Amino acid sequence: MMNAMPRFDVICDPMNQWIVWDHVTESPASFGGQILDGLDEQEAGRLAEVMNELHRSQQALADRNGKRSVR
Image (cartoon, rainbow, N blue to C red; front, top):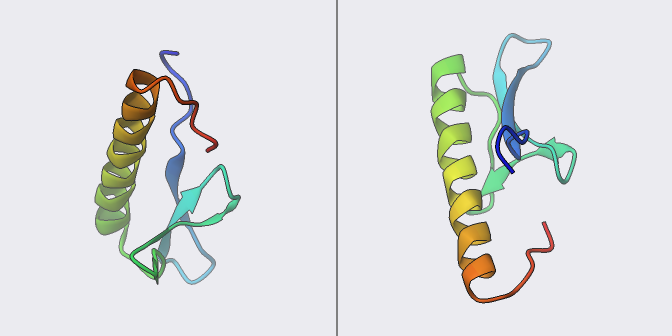
């Protein structure tokens, strides 16, 4: 599954602020109840990387346990 589109990406809103976007839910990502929006580009990029790494780790754990991830 190499080169698959990452779950989380960054997009720029009309006010020139950045959002971490969740391609699965088709909405802004959230972490710990905080919506990841209103960010500068660098911060949004770092957060998207972290969210993608967390997602990959969860998928790998589910694969090792023989469970299929819903998202």
